[in-house]
Image 1 (cartoon, rainbow, N blue to C red):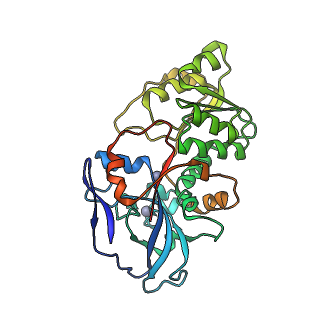
Image 2: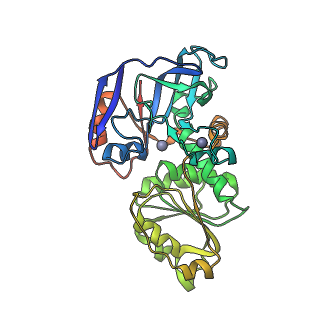
Image 3: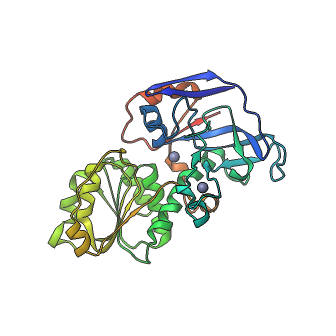
Length: 335
Ligand SMILES: [Zn+2]
Ligand SMILES: [Zn+2]
């Protein structure tokens, strides 16, 4: 079968690899749609969690092609979306509801072969049947929405909190919708791209601000009460450092965007103490796949408007290597 193989930093090609064979408790999924995500770019650029070579792709949906021994929950032909998390289930963190910090953590498409291939082998327990009403393109968004659900679980928004979000990319747009459903009152979104801001307004942002005009539009320090919640969905250190200026007393800061591994930002510990701040991280998904599926299935989180571009597997190596337009939201590979 054909697969995208990343052999090392900036070395990717589409090649023929052996077909996966399902073991006990496993199924093979014929992939139909795969979302390309920041993590795939990190792997391509040399920041791999699982070493090389690797077949990436962790946001995918498809049709069950073959089932291994002991699989009773799925049959060939079932339409499924796959939770890429591989939690061992028996370490201290798995046993205390922190599977995303599993001591034996693995991920389909990050540490074992992923969905950027015609077929992929996954544990049957990770494959969630999807309704006929859900397209494969929509189902490939369940994984990123599951990250948003985890972020919302971490954040614990209170009714009518005033929220400021930096970054209206694909993740930012999903966060905006989730924040609306979770009860935000004011919801201000900042980005560099006017088209993305317009989409954020469609999804429920009450105000949008171009990145260069944040201080003028929102005020800082003594002129401003600050927000109850500030979310970074950019992962850009300079943006994160600046974002703290807009956090009000007892404010919660959610770091949702993935910053470069060795980046640092400066933060005043006096302010952290004096303003009763709470700093919150949000790492991937933690048993949040099913709630995400339900959110998409019921149309609460709209993902179709986030799909900017569809590629074939053959077009992907070139796409990974070239610079991206700031207007781009989600890109998917279709089979
Ligand atoms: Zn992802
Ligand atoms: Zn574990």
